[in-house]
Length: 234
Image (cartoon, rainbow, N blue to C red; front, side, top):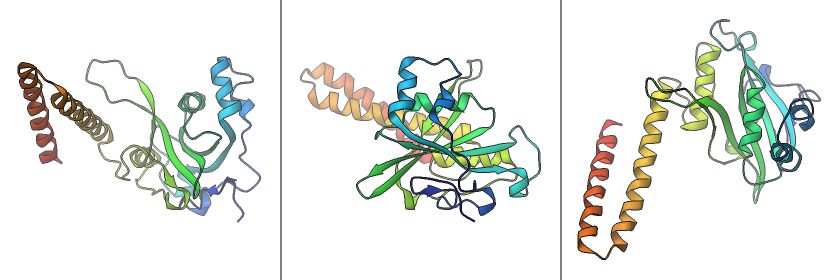
């Protein structure tokens, strides 16, 4: 079966089952669809006009084509290709698109690289927050891969679990769908600690005043102890 493509990328090149692939000639989504009838800022409109050259549905993952029980909150997952004119992902445009549809959308961002097409996954997801704090959604953008090296794995016994797995592959580079919010929060904390360690190490190297150096070193020692504790828990 001939299938829909965005640049060189299709559901099949991503490793998805053939039954999930959008047929060739279908699935193209004109950029105007996302700003012509929906009020948007001039800046967001420019994103769609200047930063994106093509948008198309590459595939649909649902309970019927995957043989999964029709249960849970999500009925289907759209896999949407977004071909870029820029090297950076237009996060605000993707977020706008994700807000317009209640089902999960896995974005496959595609840009032209020195050795062919490159891809990065992106999803909109609620950010893990502490109890009592207001939940917020944000766009997560994964790392860039050569198009031929990006392969999606389908894991889970329901569409909700498959969605969690796609989120995990985007954010943490692993298909494991279990306890994802906890793992994301842990990854974010670890990243913040590493950034803080790097900053304090530079500050300590630059400091001339002995008292100031000692104060910075004490903070650096505390952060390194926290990092060691994190690593022991992995």
